[in-house]
Length: 143
Ligand code: FES
Image (cartoon, rainbow, N blue to C red; front, side, top):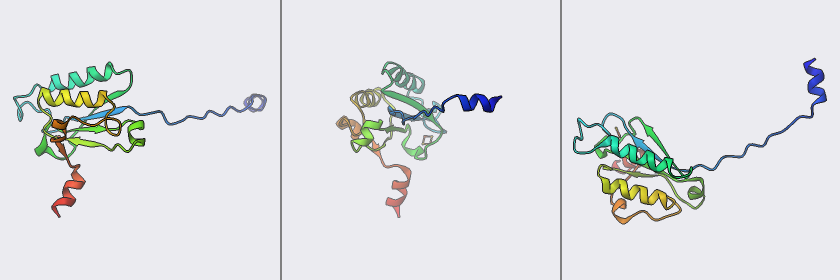
């Protein structure tokens, strides 16, 4: 019976293209980043709430993910800015931001990703001062 139905139904082929990925903030919340006992001067929950609110208001152009420890704990809080699909196609690469603790840094991160993020917009100059190498690049530089 099933075979008869299958034979009677034309096969449908669905082509699923890769969905365009939004610019994404990967927010480290591991052992050090976001830890109020280690960094009591920052409202880490407020920072994450601001980032999530911006993503919710972005119409799908910005996403926020929370990660366990990304590696460079001595540079907490670490946030990785991943380019959107369009940003990657324009040459943008993931950018690691360290010491992302204060409201100014959060403002600059949001300004950058709202403008398009890596590959599509230049980062604020002050934010560039907080760029840190990803762990594998940092290890290679120490050799
Ligand atoms: S907890 Fe964020 S880098 Fe380790």
